[in-house]
Image 1 (cartoon, rainbow, N blue to C red):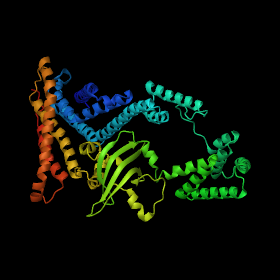
Image 2: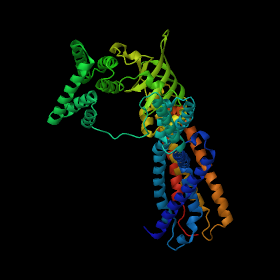
Image 3: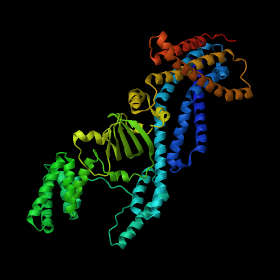
Image 4: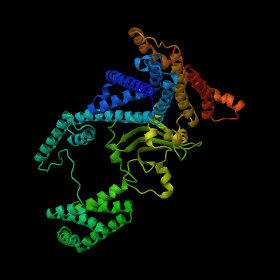
Length: 559
């Protein structure tokens, strides 16, 4: 690589970096002055939102920036002193500039297909988290005024997971704890609330030892039973388990006066454990919930019940879980078609902690005379929306299961954008566009076809390629190698040319839209149903050939 070629590459790359950084700074300042008040709750998230918003706008202007820096270099910067040598020729800057243009096109392609969709998703997620934080802060204050301190803690737990540096919210949390403790002291009850911190994880064996030392033999029995399932050959564990069972038997004798009742309890518990081991969770839940109500002092039953509930929550849910999350901000009034042929309308969807909660769902079969079915709650579980009203855990027969589950063609993360087609299309990367287009249309989305999507992206790439080569060559032909442009002229040039480049880029993209529109007429008559992307690629390719020939045909002589 000779010195002139090296200088040309350095000028192009440095010009691009400088212009891109200035553009990013401009949009950062611009967005910081127009951000909505609802997104100011959490400073760190606000800054993350501003950065992504500015970066998105800058990346969308990449085609314009590339065209602009090529025009700037070929009309002005390549006339500077480093290029004014006897060895200078047009090819010494044209060839490396062409190679670099290909790399810029790859960057633009990656930006359009992957980076911009990813940033759009992240921006939407940050906006929702900020909405949750704002709602949690206001709702916690409302609850505190109503003296509902337990609920204040649960709401602030949500807030502090988003922003644990807000001193006002931490003070409110501690005030709620203090009030709960005071109320508990008045009622001669132990405080139920604890400070905001996480417990270190422990093994079943360690938990069992701690419970045994505290003489909580029922809890110790539960943990040792679980530990034995993992370590059947541990003699020390077996001995501790034997002692614990003996202690439980002694205490059980004081609880149950009749030996028959004691025997029945042991049999029911063993049956519940067998159900749990056999993954019959609904049956195990019925056994342990019944026993726990009858013997609330036996903490091992509560722990077994908790284990069963955790397993059931993987396939079912309790309405109480959704009622606790009703205060969260939601996406409202959605409609979609599912795989069973039902049209579903949802009043509210609440995305929360990797879950999706549905409220007031109405389903109607797409056939004449079908009745509408109403459901109060729904939760996304295992690829479908489990539906129910106010009932608890209840096993549904296999033949009736279809009526209790709606299976959309796409996940709720896409369904929430039912009313925002453009927003959704901006978030889909190239893989999602090609793999989900059909499913999105089946769900009721008016989304563009894969061929149209490819044709549009080709139009963006060809606009940069054609305009960059053509205008660069034209600028080279009109340059002056005898003097650098005066400062005022250069200033006007730098101000005007970006707008001109952007206008020409938009004009070319609109022309590509006309090419796409003409496909429905010309392809049927002349090309026998040619693929839209191929059709657009051929026409744009013709323009690209002419632009390349014009670019390479410029004289290399020194004027």
